[in-house]
Length: 454
Image (cartoon, rainbow, N blue to C red):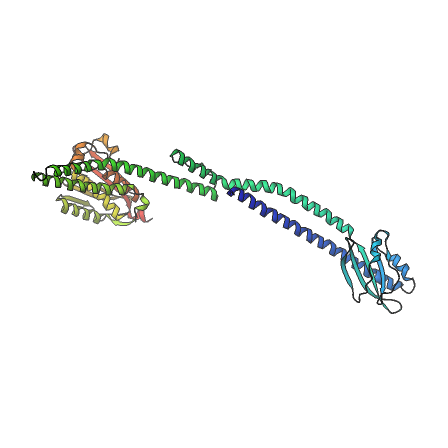
């Protein structure tokens, strides 16, 4: 059974049962109220008749008294303890109740009785007669007028129930359709994605704030994430296959060379091993960069905190001096602090220092300063520079300004693309200023400590 049918069926049955129970409660309460009131009236009337008969008992004969007080639709009986007494007096329309067996009661009685399917109020009141004996004045009064009213009430409630079930069924169907609409749209969208291979999203009403709209927005966010992952995967496969082809070809060529001529030409051995080692290292670095670029920022474990930018720059400069024998100067007017992820910021700094090392031979300068709510790190080299027309493209993956730069440094064109990803993850802003033939300045801007803490 489909979920929409289940919702329609269950809600309809539930509402119908509740409506029927409500009408039954109304009917039984009204019935009890009417019969109770009628029984009370019959008891009061019988007590009044008993008092009147007691007063006139010595002056008027009992049969005359019974005829005087008999109800319009009922019977009146005077009964002694031994079952004797005058014949009961019955109205013309209720002759069948005169055949009821008489029964004496020592105390007051009032109840509803059934005679041949008809309802009657029966009341028995003990009274002391003129001769000193205790007699029962018993009244049996028809309740058919009340039963007729209750039959009309049953018909009315049944009709109301049937009429109410029609809009109830329609509303439950509308409700099930309303609930199922986003789910049906999601199913159709997923089928479309599966058949077309293109990611689609639900069309949502911006004004809606209910749970169904929230589910739709969550679905769209999930599709956006899947699309982003798919695009990253495609990009990763494309980038990896493109960039790994060259080092693999080099390794294969030198391995074949060693296999063919390595034993007869020992001088080729060192050259081949060095080339294979160099390409293997390049492949490792390239793979690590590609894997990092393939990750979402949420998986980078970014931890933002106050960072001593002056100390970070000094430590990074020392690493480059020791590793590459290059002079790296740090200029700062006092301590400079920022609000960022220290490890990712260090990685960002290393990328720009490594670029400066590759494309310049003179001293590299790191300048730190704070301006307003931002602190900046500026890495400046006096190298070959970048043409102005190329600056907008330098953060694209695998983009090289020219082949000479790529061959010289051995880079894959991923460094600045990775820098842009890192900057976005930690909330930093990047800028590149360069003059061809004069040098390049890479600027990293992060929130100042006071701005990040607010």
